[in-house]
Length: 291
Image 1 (cartoon, helix red, strand yellow):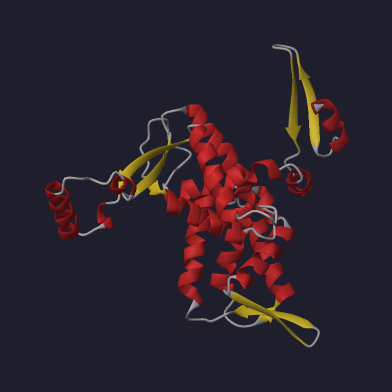
Image 2: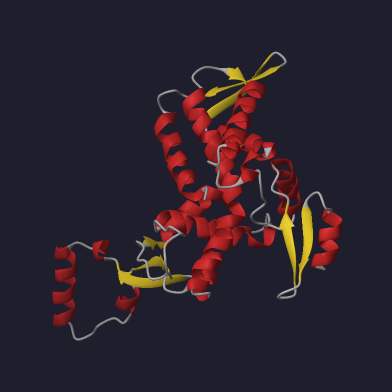
């Protein structure tokens, strides 16, 4: 199957060599930028089975301050389940024009929660449950304890009223878990880097209204410049479709406005004062996740 697939892709995209000792067939991608971009189009068709795991992995990396270059045994910070799922929803909103994350009959939050549980079962993520101390005030808890001690009965349902909070942490002690997390992260990393470049260009270069085509051209030049200067983590981040989708997402998020003046499509900041903090928040998130 691998041999047949490599033949379909052709020698311009994949080279196949045979080594004698030890006997092995080696497949290598063409490292030229045009070939990488073409390969990325083919690879996008097979990403969907891993997209939700990748979203959760990226959310965990962001919330738990995980560096995948760390050696096994490195201690990362923990994050609550709610924080991770909120970040995952935010990533899905950013990438809404790249993937269909759930079918219309399902809720995104529920599907993401199931994926988080699955990664816990895979032992990639470790969970610790703690009682929410701030559920009641010290006075209220003391009053309730004194009351229950003086009563002949104790309602067992009181135990069910306690609220436990799940905190999650990456299992950095196991190399296989770190490798799985790295794989899932790489699924979305090129897209996230495209959005990072776009966000940075909005922050640095969109001070007045511009033609959308001119601004997109500037973003594309910056993305290619990062590749040529070895600043890019993923060469696939130069793909023009993702840069276009990034502009649409930031428009939906009310960071930029895209509108028509006659036959011309224009772009400008939604509000020069209000969006700055919001834009910087997305830049910080994407800078962590771009690879």
